[in-house]
Length: 342
Ligand code: GLV
Image (cartoon, rainbow, N blue to C red; front, side, top):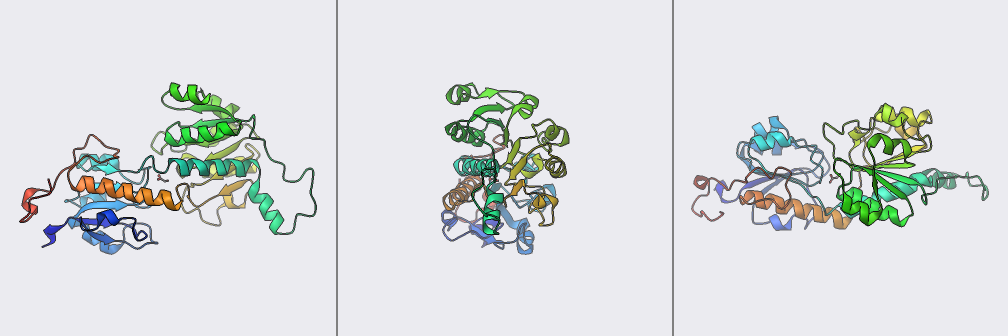
């Protein structure tokens, strides 16, 4: 009977092998590889689902949870969980898993790539070279900003912010950070100095964002914050799009309030091609690829699978955002003849 294995909804098809460890441990109903959100067969199966493994493009809210009374675990294949109503999950006793750690280095690499790209104007220079505007070596062509000696303001000093600091130190940047809590051990290790956010914004040559998206950080970088930055400043965002007000950013670069921005995340995602930010030569926009290396994405999928399996077994998740929730094993009457899973 259907009681033999718990039903898991995997919101999007993943490459062969990434979820091998789920084989034989659950029944999987898998959504379309290229369509964001839960497709109709998955939505119809919600009443029977005991687990969900989803991506950051899927919204898991109270309305969805209400359709899934047997749900015992939500596993997000992402470190950020702003797509999930964690409070609603907690209220229903559902642990929520996420994938910290495994994507730290890849995301920090991309933040550095964006920083270098913006500082040295790589997209503009590459486009000009390709399109025939490279007539000679020019002493004044494509002039950028030195990283060496510039001040980098890191907003949010979690795992990824710290990994960016480690890399930036090697480039000779002066490092300051703003964070809810002080990190004295990192200050000592990396020569970081903690500032309040207004001072960090007003004095940094480059600002890189590494805070999670929540009610406190939504539009943290708004018109006033952008106006307070140096006209020569560059903004890098590899965290979440809505941390920056996109209209205020477009206004700020158009009016020279800051010199440029490099964004791996936008609001909305995808950013429509006709969005005015795409028309600004000082703005580089990438399609949210911070963790997009083959090794990292596979490790994220494997960690998401481990979180899911732990939840299905009624055990603590290796990485959860609501540890106060005690995972529930299957109700014994649903286990059928083998009462094994506990
Ligand atoms: C990616 O953005 C993630 O949160 O994992």
